[in-house]
Amino acid sequence: MAIEYTNPRDGETGVSFIVTIYVTFRRDIKASSINEKTFKALEKGIQEIPGRISYDRETNTAVFIPKNMLRPHTTYTARVTADIEDTVGNKLGTDYEWTFTIGPGPD
Image 1 (spheres, rainbow, N blue to C red):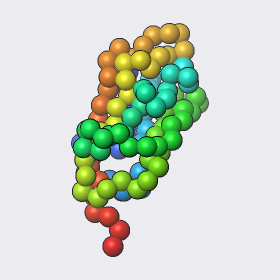
Image 2 (image 1 turned 120 degrees about the vertical axis):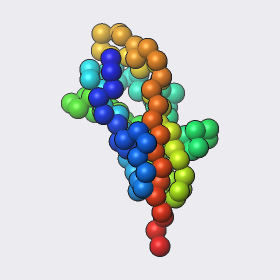
Image 3 (image 1 turned 135 degrees about the vertical axis):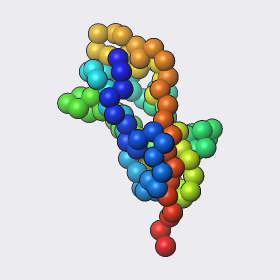
């Protein structure tokens, strides 16, 4: 089960501090396998940030909405873990991570 698309894209810079993080899968995902343990956002790759997680079955997209605005000029890592399953029970198999950097904040 592969990842089709992420937002922000891996390595993207100048991302808005108000961002919705999402990942689109190539297969239908078991919605109950998308949760705070299997989809995380981390500040500087270490500190988990709080947020709300959902899954859209029609687009195979998991969505993470941070609770607060992200810090300007800071790099974040988004991670989906190997425990995410498709609807027939196949697991992702390995963790998938991508990073992005927030641009300047509001004036």
